[in-house]
Amino acid sequence: MEELKLEVQVISTEMIKPSTPTPTTSKLFTVSCLDKASAFAHYPILLFYRNKVRDDSGSGSGPNTRPIDITTLKTSLSETLTSFYPLAGRSNSDSTILCDDQGIPFIETRVNCNLDDLLNSPRKLYLLGKILPSFQLYMSYGQRPIDEIVHVVIQLNVFLCGGVAITCYMLHKILDGTSASVFLNYWAALVRAKSGALNFSLNEPDFEATIKAFPPIPSSNINDSDAGDNDVGKAIASNWSYLKSITVVCKSFVFNNEAIKKLKDKVVTSDNNKLTNPTSFESVTGFIWHHIFAAACTAASVPNSGSGPSEVSFTANIRQRMTPPLPKTSIGNIFKGVHAQVDTLCDISKHATAIHEAISEVNKNVLENLPEKVSIANQAYYKFGSYTITNWCKLGLNEVDFGFGKPNGVIPVGMVHPVLRNFILMVDNPDVSGGIDGIEAYLCLEEKEMQNLESNSQFRVFASPN
Image (cartoon, rainbow, N blue to C red; front, top):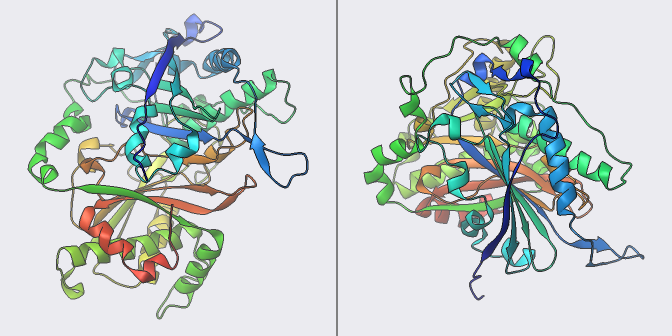
């Protein structure tokens, strides 16, 4: 297959501001103690929409000549920012945001290929950076003063076929994955409403519930605190000798509903298993954890008996775990870190059980040890047998419909880089009817470890390369 030469032409860049000025009484927004502890770091979200509609018989698909209403997208975004007004401001400390309506960048581009050319390319994960907003627009990590860091950047990419990719960078300091989903779904619902659609609802964001549950703590000067811990560039530099010597490969694998059911059965029927009703997340993650750790041991010529401890770290949304529960539309970093460990390489049921028990501890002690300092530097540091998971399943990102229909794909990674070694990123896997058929997992591993994993027939029975 000829290598895809992806070219992206920027048509326009506009700063979108709230449609209604933020009241003077709301100009200074003090973040919760959880957000204060979060990093000045952006993360990508990529939503893909094919330009296809069912024909009248319902038996096939054909090209959709729908126009893309850029004006409605922009005006709806402007109205969305009125409700999400802190996003249009700028941080002036690690605790406060000046809500001065500076706005967020909206970039419109044209791409020189069809959307499927990109999605079907074996190098798609290495090309995605070209359809993400420019690093110069969103960069943080000590590259510029915090009062110049935009909180959200959005790019609309239009392909030759009429397909669309809406790509974003979200500032983790303000938005966790659930918050980003609330924002995107609100914007999309407004677009549909202005287009005359009847199937929409506006779920208003709730900033106050987060602050009441997790009151702010005094501000500190970010330059004199632990800003260095939040500087991924410094973290990379400190590990440069290791990073120069390896190649990280990122590939995606689908675990459809049928495969997940079999994995659950595999966990339950394993010898000495303690779980009677494992969740999809526990089963799939336990399975992946077992096999990528085994692949790492093989690559490093480490015998199973001497493999030592292995751990996974991820976050748990605590909105509904609190008493009383917080609104599902609460905005902020409302999560708690979860850490599970096994002492040595073992079967998948023990991996799944370790995950289950770690989540159970969070459920019992949801407020213990909060807030937790989020350190990008620590996440960028590689440790054998240690894995980091980002789980976006059931966040509602697969429901973001701008009038194009539900996304044909949601991708949570915008680059392949050594700093992502031992990262696992999970999203809902869409089916052709707009529903969900299991989980798609993006695995970022050292090249030899990935080769070992892909050659493992026991892994490939359940995991389908995508």
